Image: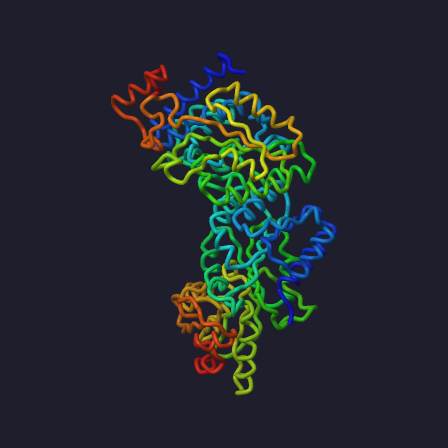
Amino acid sequence: MENKNSTETCSRIRRMIMDTIVAAGKGHIGGSLSAVEILVALYHGGIVHIDAKKPQYPLRDRFIMSKGHACEVLYAVLADYGFFSVAELLHLGRDGSMLGGHPDRHIPGVEADTGSLGNGLGIGAGLAFAAKLDRNTWRTFVLLGDGECYEGSVWEAMMFAAHHSLYNLVVIIDRNQLCVLDRTEDCNRLDPLDDKLRAFGWDVVTVNGHNIAELSQALSSARSRSSGKPFAVIANTVKGKGISFMENDVRWHHGVPKGELLEKAYCELDYRGVL
Amino acid sequence: MKYMRDSFLESVYQQMSYNGKIFVLSADVGAPALDKIRKDYPSRFINTGIAEQNTINVATGLAMEGYQVYVYGIAAFFLRAADQIRNSLLLYHQYSPLNINILSTGKGISYETAGPTHHCLEDLPVFSAFPGFEIYVPSDATMARAMAAQLIQNGVRYFCCDGKKVALIYNDDFCFDLSDGYITRNSGEKSCIVTMGGMLSFAEEILKVMRSKGIEIGLIDLFTPTEFDKDKLLSILNNYSKVITLEEGYREEGVLSVQIQKLITGTCIKLHKFGFDRKYIFEPGPREMHYKNAGITINNIVNVL
């Protein structure tokens, strides 16, 4: 449900992302801000069944952040959820920090090493296949970027998952419409993405990726579906969401605002920053 | 003469009868021994189709859940999945050991008439650069079976098999000790050949020719060109004044020539390298013709010895 708590959580995560990239002096801010509500719905919304105190509990759900470059949002959510200290965020990329520029298995709560785009869904398909084979009930969730969907390996995995009826596999696509240089529809058209996924044998719903209620409703149904198909949620989002001058602007795929822009970003996020 | 891949897969098949955690994937490549696995263990076999990238990713996911995974495919096309081998598989393996065994067929130019798309002289140099990736090159079907039977602990391994039936060098009752990474086939006086894979039978011919001349040469089967005991092998090679590397790889960039060059640097040993010119081979023809074109002939090698 959309409520005050989830709104506050998303605001807090956005501030943590901002603090992280300001402290690091770099970061993939656009794609992190677009995925805030998706990750908050998954973790804080209770979709992903996982206990931060037992990150290796065998029957936990698995979440793979395939768009690993947007690690700042993952780190913020994992820290906020209790996997590690929030203070650790301010050390990203520094000597001795456990947080690097892409997620890896050294970090509590991270299931797979991602950063080379296009691999998370295939790994997730392997996990889901193993769970099905072992008659385990845990689910595998994978977050893809829409630009990532240009990788052929994504579609190899899509075919595989549908053919093997991996009903326990859920993919969320952060459909923010932008890749690094261009709008996706000006680069290589992805649309109609939902029809493509259906043609590949997936159940598909499209939601507003910044509406926690819509996300939660769609993702909750992942456990109750009876079609036997893998499940895709296309989350329509805005790259750079929450900071007006970054929204829908390809220049903010990667970068840190400075000077007046930083002040404006702080103002729009309604805080002063920790640094 | 026997296919290495079949002996390897026969061992896997036998192990599947008592190890329920073995899972086999094929990137749409067949073998008689694989047919038995498909027939008797259909729930633990997937033909992933001609999709090497996804095959490696799926294998990674299965291994993360505790499966001992075998991936079967063509050597040249595992290069297509180099990214997945490195980033999905080996990065994870360094932190949390996995058990994944990639069985490739079509080593070197063993698909002799298939043209350069199917030749593979680059997989071993590329994969030997990947930390944590153990490379094994069986020299006959007996050794391939021994490798499958013995190397069952956690590890990420690449077994590079010839695409053709290869003469049996080792008897069925040969007791393989794989721990040193090499087997001394013969000890000699001044010169020693270091080789691997199907080239071993070619080297054995040279051994016979030299013996007919009253000269004993050393012969080392370096079946794992990256993981071998370097101190032990160097102590053996130090007994010779001349070492010859013989491989179905590029003459200078081949994994054997690079590894042995590195090993003997600083010694007085003279090194001669036999391998292929660094170019793609378009001319169709039998393997022997390609060897001859590259200067890999018994006469040329005997002249160096």
